[in-house]
Image (cartoon, rainbow, N blue to C red; front, side, top):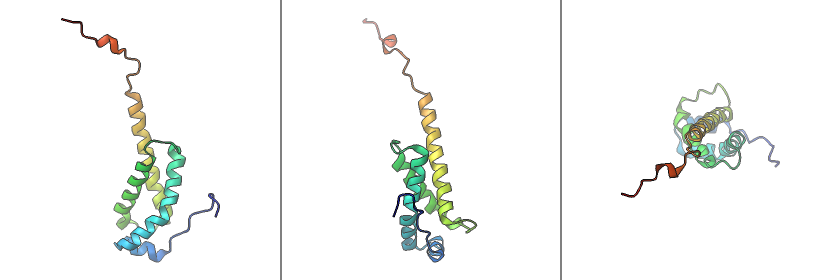
Length: 116
């Protein structure tokens, strides 16, 4: 299977069982959706992003938390991709805020205390 091949589509019965609270079905669903979610996070953040694994983990947790509200108006893979996209974009925004708060141009010697 090529890396560009689409992820297998989970059967509707698996999705229904997971939405209904079946933990075994939820685990299997996550195993099927995780590779696509990882690819999406990598494409949004870059393969070397320091928080890539954390972003994917937060997205998987988010998916499990909102799974009971899944109405089936789109595919479960699309639903998961929206969650990972929002999670990755939030991480990028946080990185931008952190980047703006750097004090690289501050001279540490300017704060030196004169000996008493």
